[in-house]
Image (cartoon, rainbow, N blue to C red):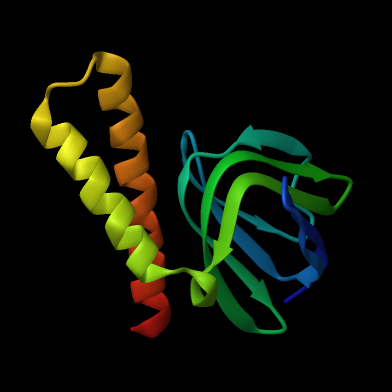
Length: 136
């Protein structure tokens, strides 16, 4: 497969700077794959699994929020949060899941707190799912 330049940059810094054969991400509209010679575009990211194929190997990550840009053959992924599967702290994700679920189950908090808890629950479930795929 033909490769293309890829950078993954988060608010915490540069995560990846190299070449890839394919990148798959969850956008707000659904899943999207980028390969060499992709048209120029900018798309907002949703919450989900990202996959990067580089050197013939597929690596997965939890990718939440941000944007993806393809410009003149170069792809830049700028997520709010990006965690390679092997770096996910499953215990932390389980604690976040339990805490968010408790808030949702209590139904005592206001609508904003409930919406925040729903988002935290989704992030925790994505992290757990990505970590499980890595081990599985």
